[in-house]
Structures are given as C-alpha cells and as structure tokens.
Image (cartoon, rainbow, N blue to C red; front, side, top):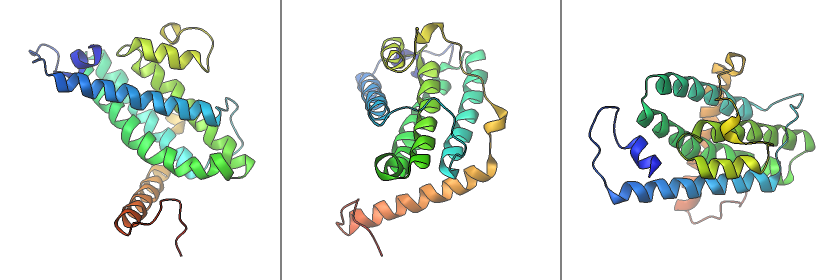
Length: 199
C-alpha cells in the first residue's frame, strides 16, 4: 500500500486506486527478496578488495547517480520519481545485468574476482535497503538484519560518493551489458541453453 501511495502520483495530485499497482508492488518486493537471498547465498564481502572489475565500477558509478537523484527528489517530496527510479535500478541494472554478469565469478571464478563481486553486491544491497526503507519498511528491515547489526531505520540515508562516479566504466559497462543482452537474445532465438558456450 505504501508503494502504491508513493508511486501513484506526484505530490499534490489525486491518486486513483488500481489493483494492478498493488500487484506490481508485490512483485517488486518478491524480486527484491530474491535479489537479497541470492546475495546472502553467495556471501557478502564487507572488506574492500584491492581491485574492482570494470563491471563493478560500472554499477557502483550508476548507484552513486541514483543516490544523488533520490536525495534531490526526496528533498522535493517527489516520492513517485524516487521509488520509480529505485525500482528500475533494482530490476534492470542490478538483477537483469550486474548479477547475471558476475555469476561466473561468484560460482567459479578466481578468489580475487569473487571478492570484488561480493563486495560490490554488499555495497549495492546495503545502499538499496536504506534507500527503500521509507517506502517498504518491513522487508527492508528483514533484509538489512541478515547482514548488518541494528535497524535499517536507525542507519543514515545514503549520500553519494563522487569518487565512485566513473564515466569511462559506465561507458564500457553499458557496452558489456548490451553485448551480453544480444547474446542472451540470440541463444533464446536459437534455442541454445544460456550456459552453453559459444565459439
């Protein structure tokens, strides 16, 4: 209900109740829970590694821009814009791209690559639970309690780290994501298993 109220319209506008918005909110929470379970299953590394891969720097850069936008929009009481962008990031950037791109490292890569990916997932999940806490307080509290001490509602709202904004990593990361998407599409069209190697 909180998601529906927040995303249903801009501040000061009337909001028409639509059941499909409640269903969409429920689906998003299920997706968030799946993301969190995956992260906890592969393990979260709180210690910053010596090196981050370009795709790690890509998502961390995009995350800083998301934080910056959220702070600005929340200060203007534009809850609909804030929640919509967080949901888009969770679904499209994190779940559809980043997690798919790092699964190989997390399951069978070298130790350095695994540490970098699990550290990046820790930063992203920690940040997203705090960004989402005002909108979905119960599930964010549950997720946060699985990897941090204390309450998400007593932790500070995220602030962007300008040092993590990396335009070159974003450019390369977008290219990697688009190539990977094209390969997945090709495999689906040719009825090839997603994990099957290509020449």
